[in-house]
Length: 143
Image (cartoon, rainbow, N blue to C red; front, side, top):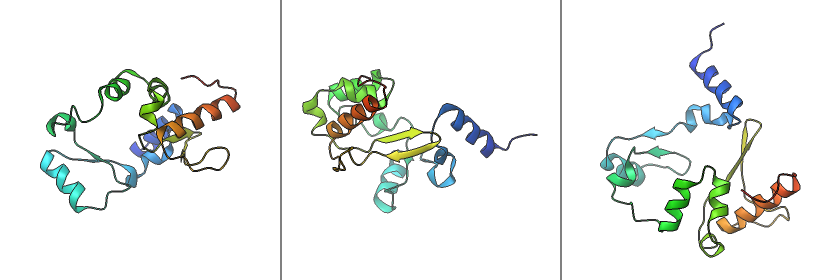
């Protein structure tokens, strides 16, 4: 039996342990061609849960220096989000906000609360919650 493209994508995601929701049409990124298209999309569309991609966009938008050097280097050098968070100093993480998703069993879940039910605000809070979850699961606390 020949798999459809959608079935093959779902099978590949499941094998890799990625969320199956990435195969949904609603989750597919909108790939744009020019900085103008990108800015128009951001300014004129409802994009809270929409992903826009502008290939080479950081350079095209001249934003290479927009992030602190230490953060840029961590993103480039670390193979996972968890290792990237572990490599950054607490002082930086406590000032940064961002969504962190847990992926497993073909599902994804946004990390919003710690094990105590407290809302996680900063990336420092989320890094510490990840460490705690891994320690509880027997996976250690490191990257």
